[in-house]
Length: 82
Length: 199
Image 1 (tube, each protein chain N blue to C red):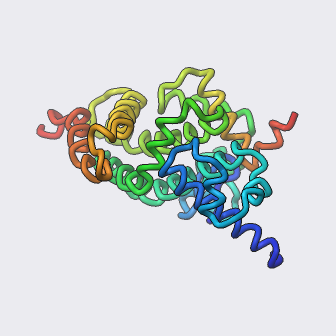
Image 2: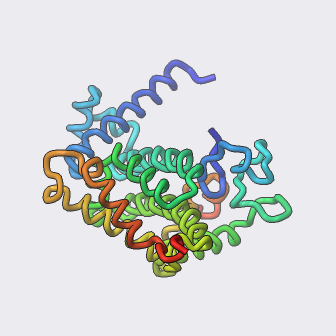
């Protein structure tokens, strides 16, 4: 089973994939309206805002959570190499 | 194609993770690697060949648990269109990992930060499904218009309170099997917009 390289979501159904295209490595939530994958910064901000909204966390804590998650994802892990 | 040696290495690593999961479920995260090695039938040194530090072992075990839970939630919650079905699905999945999860939430503060963050990320996955279903129910006015994060946190607070006090609520039997129905019904009673439904 494929897992989205940009957020880690399992992709099984056609509707899970960006543009319903199973050859894509990223999911419907990580693509832009034109079908391309969101950038690191777009994804980072989007996930921080979603974490605050869905769980009510403090912004600093939400940032730490999101970055720790992104560090483990194939699409973003190189951004964290110091 | 993988060599026989690579396959054997992967199989040993998987066995260590599965055994560590069982040991941590029973004894908590202070259980020693020597105990895990003995139960897995490998030498103590073998554990450190695969996991140079205890933290790496902890992260792999919790990540393996977390991705299993995320996949099960994704499979089932995606089909759920009501808050009731979502809550039932969540507790049904969680009940299969009850002991491990109790140790995880009780000992989170004692675990290294990176390890604790794996748990928090797993809860974000649950929040994602929760958000999707609850928002739809708020829009259709079947659930009260309360901020989604407060509905989620109230639910998690209630579930965690019961799990962390298992010794008081259900010392000798699985807790979620015993209380799921009552917890779900009570929570739904609190969040459902009964007035709208009856109109």
